[in-house]
Image: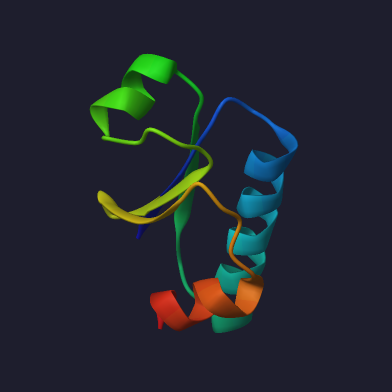
Length: 76
C-alpha cells in the first residue's frame, strides 16, 4: 500500500501524516509513506485544498484532517 500526504508542509499536513501513520500501525498494515510538497504535483492530483490523503493513487480525504478512527475505517 502506498500512502501519500499532499500539502505544503503545514501543521495540518504533519497532523494528517501522524494520524495516518497511527491508523496504519493500529491496523497492522504494511504501507509505504510519501510526503508530496511540490505544488505542481499536488495540482496534477486534482487537489485544490490541502492537506490531502491519497492511498494507492486514490484521493481519500482533502482539505481536512480526519481522526485516526476515521482513517482506520477507510483503510480496513
